[in-house]
Image 1 (tube, helix red, strand yellow):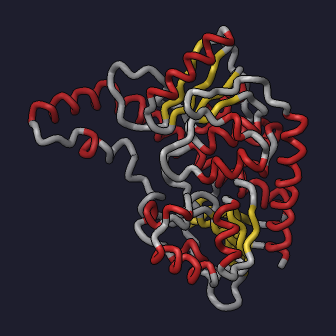
Image 2 (image 1 turned 180 degrees about the vertical axis):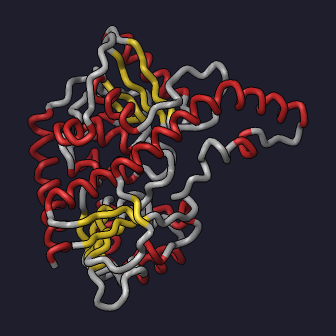
Length: 360
């Protein structure tokens, strides 16, 4: 079988490249197939944040003096580390994603995961993410863990257009239960499926990517997707309680000289630091997902928008108390024997959907 994956893969985001890697690896390991991640790019899934392109946006200011100051900060503190990060991402994609330019001729196409159906990210709906590359008789259009962010934040016009476009997809699996419920209420036979990162176990990540432990003192890993003072404070509080240091992975680009953190981590660095952490605090969905995969105690600070994917996942696993809200933080050890039962059930349902859709 020849299978193409249409998803976010070009942005320098750990969750994006790792969910693509996990989906590709699972399908290759389950079916006699050739799987490639199709190199389709649009706004939200491109390389605009490459180190060679971000300087103009970083130094933008009406003041010439401020522009000169920002340029100095960029050249001295941002570019050297961020260049290393971009190179690590490019190396990972070349080694592990089987990027292909072949848009058509697939026995099946997998649409997703990530927010491929969020028009505010992709600059309007992209027909390719609904299987428009598939010609008559070429193969099935399969959405797996496709996401729109938060359907509750959509305009009525965008909701109506989403229903029309999803109607052309042969098998519909979506990441958020809230999106699944909405699609069902509008006549779409949808299934709630787990994010692709869950398709591989900790042991499979270690084996497939050759992950190695990093000897160091006990630490709380803070993965911050957007700079957030409250998350910094939470990490410090938890670290103090547990007698740990804080190791901070910064997923954002803009920084100041006083910002402490790791800005040059690639996907392998991210996973190895996650694997060795004593505790995790994050404001990221995939930071939460990998905390669960690596069975870490964690807290998540909910983002101001597009939080339904986190809420849905934590609710399903009875872990909503791990969300730090209104100053209330639960730091008790997670009972993973209970969590894993529900997660395994969800995972088997998701794999069953994916397997039967590809066979179909």
